[in-house]
Length: 66
Picture 1 (tube, rainbow, N blue to C red):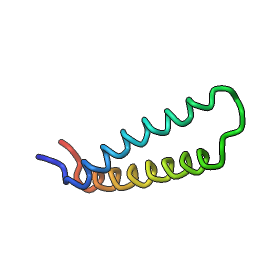
Picture 2: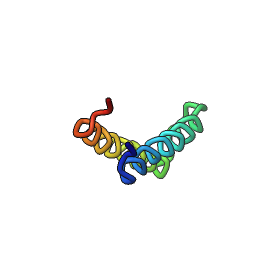
Picture 3: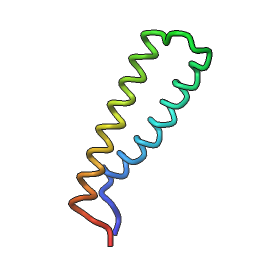
């Protein structure tokens, strides 16, 4: 059985956003303060990941895999 296309999209977004988040966080290896714009982008990506994870988790709870 194939998953709902919306759920697949959320899974792809989780992967993509985690990669972007890792890139942003690894760019701060000098230990300096993060630019406000970068901090805002990190916060935005974190919120999007959390939202997509909740949507996927709810779907998986309603449609358990055998």
